[in-house]
Length: 116
Image 1: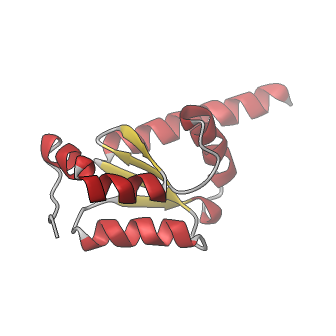
Image 2 (image 1 turned 90 degrees about the vertical axis):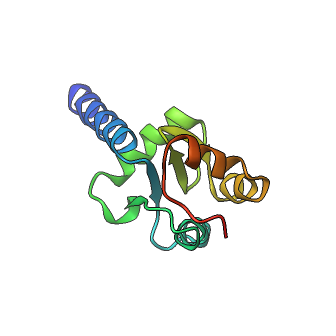
């Protein structure tokens, strides 16, 4: 049993890494979470192309969240990655946008966005 769980975890780790590395902006979310909705709405408002994976709707969502918690030391959704860097959750995203630091990351990584 331990090997099966370890293998699942390894596959989840590979999947999470692949999603983060292949998407300039990646959000791991839950469909019912208001903070996730706020983060995705803010990105949409800035016209940022992003991909989101709804952990509660994916058959591997629990394993992905375990991996994300281990990677980021954050236990709550959303998990927001920009240019393969973990930004944080909703509050960190909003603060970074307010301060302009997220827009700088968008510019440096050539990620389309609106400043409004």
